[in-house]
Each structure stands twice: as structure tokens, then as C-alpha cells.
Image (cartoon, rainbow, N blue to C red; front, side, top):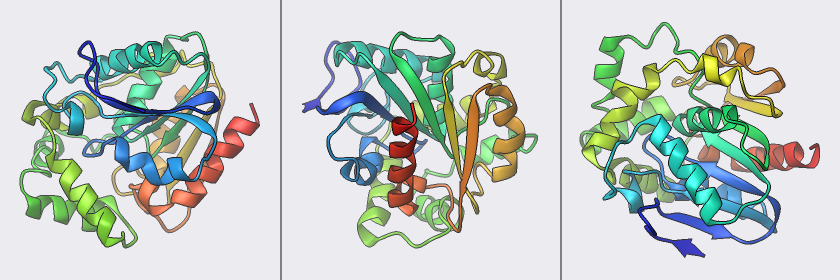
Length: 258
């Protein structure tokens, strides 16, 4: 079932299945369909895949596009979809949104899976100069291709997924596209991440240039009280597309262990 903007909610896809509901939150430049290959390998599971406000099918929704607004939207979608038990699965920017939601201890939350996640505490490398440069990564098709092939990935994507990354990166409101690099990426949420009490699984790509393994070890793991970390070999930042089967298996294992 696909839900378009209902009562100003972002668009989302809900597939009925076995609880807990897996709530998939995409990266800066992604969309709900970034997660589709993973969802396809989780047959029978109840899933929610969201197009964040300002992105893809939700690109015409007004701002603000802050991390807190994305978190509030996700909570509203959970209520709209009547999810009783759920696990948040957040990639990159979506991982930081997941931390904000989990910190509020919502009823029904069973755990979080943070995939190449934005850390709780920004790395020292996130300088104003870095953020300004990053804000132009999706300015043109050429800059997207450069970011996709030389920064976001460490493996070769299929032609289909190469085109999808290109399309999704450009299918956004300009203010939404600027919010993460100029502000969200530098937001220190460590005080709230420390409030996350549910089990957490942190998954990193060995060759991730965006959220390197060392950054997740030093700037995320110390703020999670009940977490384990797994490093997938040979892959970069786009784990849902680069390590689809391994990621689906890790999510299944995490759920089955709860």
C-alpha cells in the first residue's frame, strides 16, 4: 500500500506482514526506494519505507526540513500506519533521525539499526568549509555522478541503481537538499543519543568515506548503552545497494534476537 501526502504527511509505502514493523529511513540524497532491494529480501515482514519531507514524492511538502521535523514526521507516520511494535532502520542522515526518535522512548520501539549512520557527535572533520563544499554535491548531474562513483560507493552499482541514485539525489526541494550539509550534519545530538535504551545494531562499511568506521566507533558507539557494531568488508557508504543481502541478513538476525 502506498500512501501519498495525507494530512501533510510525507509519502510512505506500507507492506503488511509480521511484526515488528521495520521502519526504513533513507540517507541524504536517497528515498524510500533506496531500501527496496533490502525489503525484497525480507518477505513476510511488516515494513514502512518513507520519503522524507522535501525528498522524492514528498519534495513539495513545506519545511522546515530539520532533523527534528523528520523525526516528528516519522512518529506521525507510525501513528497513521497503526504500528504497534517497530524497529527503526536508519541509513546515514536517517540514522541520526532514528537516534532522535529512540531517545524519546516511544511506546512500541523494540530496537534500532543504524547503517552508516550520522554519528551522535559530529567528527572534527565536519568544518564549515567541508559543509559548504558538501552542500554543492548534488547541484548538477555531473556532481552527483562524481559523488556517487568516487565518494558514496566502494563497489560498482548496477546501471539501474546508478540511475536511481542520480534521480533521487536531484528529486528534492532546494532547502531540503541544503539542510543536512549546512546544519544537520553538524548538529550534536549526543545528549539525546545517550537516552536511547533499546538495543542497537551499528553497521559500517569498511571503506565508507562519508561515515568512516573510526568515526562510528568514536563518535557514536560511546553514546549508546546497549549496542554492538558490525563492519561489512569491501563496501562503502551506500550499504542498502552495495551489501543488500548481508544487510537484510543482519536485520533479520537483530530482530530474531529480540
